[in-house]
Image (tube, rainbow, N blue to C red):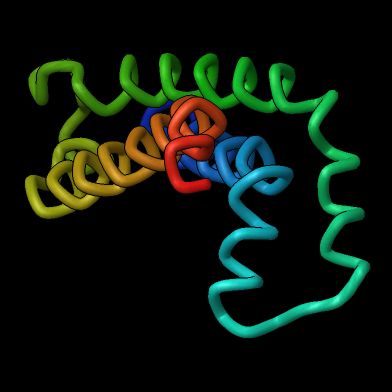
Length: 116
């Protein structure tokens, strides 16, 4: 059961990259909405120049996860994690959640001005 066969590592990488990509823009808004305040929140925009790198990493990781998760079950060896239907379903759900996070990270800077 290697990481390349079940897509777990690629999903984790995609999720972390999506969170980091949206940290510069979505992070301060969420913190202010939750009632946190202070001048330190403005320092979160320091990650903005790295946003394209994080988004690129998330998209690449999602591609590799998609390749591993959505392959036919016949390609899995009996006894592998990818051969268990419940695990396949869970990985597919997690994949779509991570894909939604990446979509939010991509769209948020363009939707944000509509709220001001």
